[in-house]
Image (cartoon, rainbow, N blue to C red; front, side, top):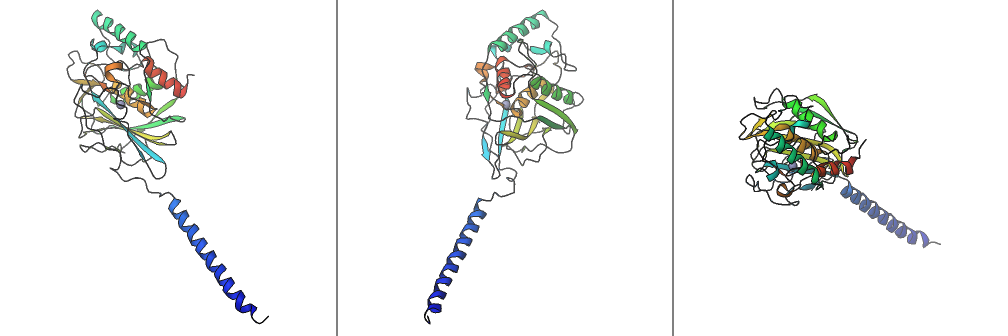
Length: 321
Ligand SMILES: [Zn+2]
């Protein structure tokens, strides 16, 4: 009896020690698993792949871009870059798909019969090609977006917003010349002008910055030869926000000039960029050059309506109403 307290105390002490060790070990495990709240610092996005020279974009290069980066809170960012390209064989008619663009204020209408025949030919090719590629995300509900007009080239400063909005409507509205059903069960809404900038770095190595909860379309002079860049932040396959930057190094038009040599159609490029924002990614420009999602677009060409492949991709993601 006298010996018991002496035996019990070490046992209690050992038990208490084991309990403390267990608690400390559990707490440190929890600390390790807890995601850091901080978003990735600007400039930590995936670096741009080397910009191919105009017309030499790699063929069928899905590994080129998009490129993803896993954030610690499950936020993933993907950068998609559109480059200038040589005219595709089907698109040599120049102004092409504009007959279906009544919704585009100031949209050019081809006057010559030659342009009209080229448009019909391009339209047929665009409707035959069903190639598409999905980026791995979709927009849930309505994608609201802002526009920052700062730095817009004077040639388009008054018409740019209308062209950008029209491009968004074309995509979700399934604007096409192929008799395909429209619109998609997807939504987009212009939320107003903003002073916020798009989180895309202007250094020679284009990269995505920090997600700020606002989808912004903006102009910047990019250090790369990209025509436009879209950064899309997603979580579990759903879009959190998308920023689109249009490169002011290039000349832009919203209505094709009569003697077009080197400027790019803003509505066509934006239809492509909105495609990324809604979950589409690139197809080969040499094989599928009539599709909106071809990874290059030639100067002076117009691809404002969805090809069969573009439509198929959007339909698969959203369905039609
Ligand atoms: Zn692209």
